[in-house]
Image (cartoon, rainbow over all chains, first blue to last red; front, top):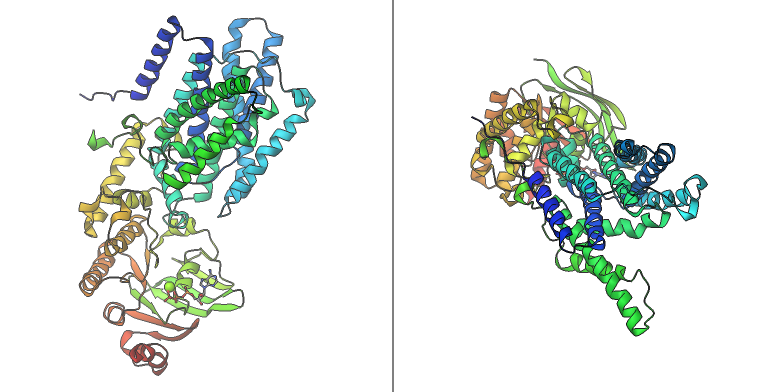
Length: 331
Length: 257
Ligand SMILES: Nc1ncnc2c1ncn2[C@@H]1O[C@H](COP(=O)(O)OP(=O)(O)OP(=O)(O)O)[C@@H](O)[C@H]1O
Ligand SMILES: [Mg+2]
């Protein structure tokens, strides 16, 4: 008889859920829960960026631009639902649909950017996505219907811990399954040598555009969850600096290692919060002229240190056991 | 015998440099056909034109009766033209097995969705592909290396791995760009036998570039000799070897040092 494989990812996610629920009973306050939620949002963003930058080896610098699209689209939909219908039962299915709509919108934007750019060989994608991230921010900044520079306010707080965890699990599982399949092999071949990949019959442009769109989709979903966690979608939340933050998570964890991205998303989200509290304590205690964004200096230093001493990041391209799907005859 | 590859009036310029000048030739089906010439005479460029990396400035390339001039590389491969590279282009971080397996994937019966959900169709396809890839590694004496990371293989084995990978695409025409480069005399001997065997076993036409005179003369049934983008001789080895222009332009220079 065939014994089904243990779905380790599901087990780990369920374990994490249970631990957090238990901790809630013994003083794990709302702030800690917020950090857990934010970490999971960054897991979605980092893992989906790693699909683009790590697995298929392109270089995108505007991941937060896609998150912004997802945030504004889903936020607009849910605020509308909230206004129109006081029926709470309709809210959650509506929320899930809104998140998916946000993801689809981000993916469409991804195709629009990726199709002309990814046909070219070279670092054009980096330049174009860099511009895109800023342009999309400026656009939202100037549309009054979504609040302009005030941001889209009054987004309902639908992103609960359980919902975010479920979406993080789905994101990681889907991207893991693709990376571990024959399609993932094609993508890695493109990363390793694009011309040789072309010449073993792989439609490299087609793959790059599809993967870029898929990464954008999950970034859009992540952005939607983010907006429904903070209850606001604001142009400044999606600036270049935050795209770089996700990028650093990918590089710190190891480009090409999904496990690394998950770990780095947690580690760096927590580090950011610790630094922020430390800096505000320091500012209060010493009167030093320290701005709220000074924690970014640490990110910059971290990036430099990675580039100098450990280009492969925490994990290189290695994966934890639960992220590897063994071959049929090797179980 | 009919021609599997037919090139007519093909020229190619890189800016002001005419790298390929008015080529006319046919590669007969089932042959081992050689392309020789001094450094920079346009050999690799010829392969790059046939495989669609560059579009020829002038002329026409027909493969198996169809026009492939200017087609996208992956489409040309799917029609049945495979190649190796003079400067190796392996998928370094992938296993030896995966380097070959990835070249069998261009006709996926299972969709992205089927592989995401790991449906049975996806699993059956994976099993078949692995078995076929292992068989190719066996023919090229690389089976015991299957699990190793490709970049850790020595040079001679990497050259064979590129041949295995090219064969995995199921070609009718196999282009080999200096397959013996960097090999020792014993390896060169083995490679000659291997290429003959590959031609017979896989029913492919072989079109190869080589500097080793003994290699080309011993293995090829027809030879085309280039110098500065011009064809200076074409025919069977015995005749080409005696051609005065060849002796002067190519063999003469070789003998000089
Ligand atoms: N992409 C390119 N851009 C500009 N010039 C090129 C390019 N590729 C090749 N050339 C030039 O075209 C000429 C023919 O080059 P090619 O690589 O075809 O020579 P080859 O016969 O393969 O030589 P070798 O024996 O050294 O491999 C050379 O002068 C080379 O410098
Ligand atoms: Mg060459």
